[in-house]
Length: 420
Image (cartoon, rainbow, N blue to C red):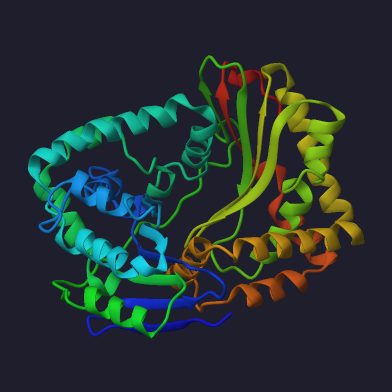
């Protein structure tokens, strides 16, 4: 897949990814910024700023004017804050590319940050925090990462706490924004139906702003929680009909050469409806509806995880089955058929995803922000194809050390009754 990467005069990074046979275009602006860049006092401020970008600019004075202009185009648009990245995107019919670029640049360079609007938006953010906490399926990852990375910003909730959000002062918020929202810290990805005219539009709207200061790149290193058994489990007691269980092991940082191997391993273990865990936990024993395994990577850390939603009385049985399947992967590795099918699955899923300009924009933005060198989807697929059964077995042996397992649970469960 062809792409072009270049810099504007103000050091804004731009990546152009043309996609044949589409009329759509996605414009995504991403910053290497997220909750792990925040102090304890300012925890949640990156997410708060993301919300405020939709509250009006000098040219588009309020939320209604701003969103109505995008809505009338039938566009998909949103923003997101992670632990290491913040992004803003608009996906439109390519005839409206200039409008999409204009709106994004306007939001990022000329948002008003009106004091009254800033106070008002604290309410919706507090409700968003409560929504996650009330929904165990959405919140289990927060509880798990809070356990895995206990004692460092990587373990904190992205949205911060209600108390923090309600206490944000306008001057402190704007100071934080100015430390990171500089053109040289931005990556603009435009994917889909792009041409020479698109390049001129990007230059016109994103080249006008100067860097007022050097963007801050510092963040605190990750820490793992204690390896003492009693401190490797966290139960959030909550009355629910279904218990959410997430267990995991320290894994690999973004770009680690073992990541493609871990991807194949997870596909075999719990990535599909024919995977080992799905068959053993759901089909053979009827213990759960949801069961899956996966991987998460950050700049300097990562983990492999397994998630299950199940009845309280089945927790220990499910943990025992997971342990058993992990031990099988370590002792015997995958079969030739499992290995072949996993690669075909990854290839097929990637082929479907590549038809979406939004996926492409996200893929290249993440590569640009976190990888030493951008690898195209085809290059990534070559890495997957090269994975051997012996490599999968070796990575399983390296990762799945049961004396390092971390277990997070949300439900009406007593911690001391969990056997692991």
